[in-house]
Image (cartoon, rainbow, N blue to C red):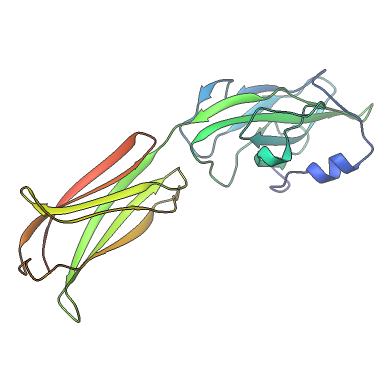
Length: 226
């Protein structure tokens, strides 16, 4: 699996006086299979080239619409790369967020210099959220505060974090905040400043959740008020 560089190759092909045909003899997608659900942000794309043709590039878009030649419209491009002839395999180095995608492959017939786009093939990446851990640290000066660190990952752009701190039916802190999603695990910081009615050392229950698209992950820990 080799790629010369992660680039879309679009301007050079569009600008050249080369006839780009609709899928007359186009590559055949192997994986992800049409309509597949892919549970990774880095899918392994594989395909088979027609006889006497060579792969030129792979493209990923967030809509299936194509030009008369079979290329995705530039406004819908998500990722892609030039590939070497005979590769037949590629995986994005940058992770893909949850959503519906379409991909196709551009091939060429060296004997005629004609180019062919394969028909768009659909796949879906479902929402994946992980809550790795919750830690809290108390500070008494210069101002009483509880520092909460949430380690999580999300393959969505703006997951929602909710933190609830209380004892029994009494809630002393309730906050909801969206954050930039990260496919790689990352730390998110939150701070609680208790009022004078909350005594120092009071045992409380902290519940943390991350949610998006109907998926929620929750963790709870016991803490003491600073």
